[in-house]
Length: 327
Ligand code: SP5
Ligand code: ZN
Image (cartoon, rainbow, N blue to C red; front, side):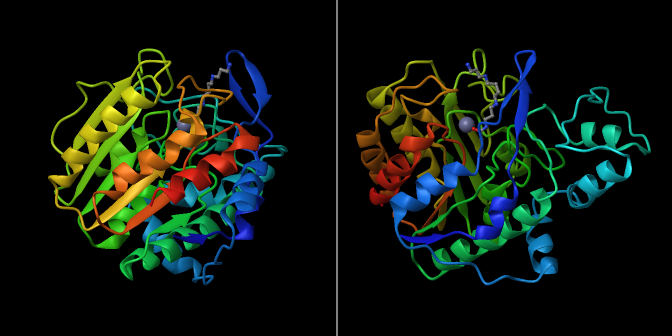
């Protein structure tokens, strides 16, 4: 397993997120990275591709206007006399197109929640993350398995929206940039709504997700079992799910993904399925991650593992290392 990471990704360091009627310390903190780096050993640095190449790759999954906003939002925020992190707070659920001028409106039009703050370093971190992602994708083209330490996460980001700590959808960007028939397996605790919204209806990509039932858990508006069909398979699981039931659902997802004859497997790996996760409610143990990964590895194709969630910071590294070891 070749591992990729770029220190420039640390520039994204959110202070707070808003839910349950209050500001909370951000769950997606840069310290997550230290826990993973300490556990996985040597990492390779990406080649610092030109920004134009990184934007072209991101543009396969995301609208140009959305990427422009990500690139310029913080400068607009400062120009409007603001300080601190940008948090959206007004959302155009009616979807009537308007020319929006104020940064408050422009941000709200490209977000679905208050959990994806933007700060001065966010855009540079996202470009560096894209560089990391593409380097890991190149490794899979050479036949290796690869891990991209993608932080911030990506699977809640859709074609033109951010949310859930996610801004660029790493799994979708990789699948679309690969030029290969791709199976995306989303193993984060939360449904990969953004990935689904980007890849639904494509003949060359299958998307399967195991996640907490949206009847009880974020992101609430996506991911029910009946929201399956075509190239999408959603397998919601109840709170409290432990290894046996999770592994059975994974077997189902892998069988279905195999029917697409993939040439590449992309795993959106969230360690927030861990029993000790502070914001989640499954009961997967550290020792479970290797056998779960081994099941996915039976698909028998080069695999790109991406990091999504996982907020028990002290255990995150061990959980990621255990999962990677299963390949
Ligand atoms: C990538 C990822 O895992 N994103 C998850 C975003 C979840 N945001 C949820 C905010 C609400 C969490 N409620 C926590 C209750 C803690 N007691
Ligand atoms: Zn998650």
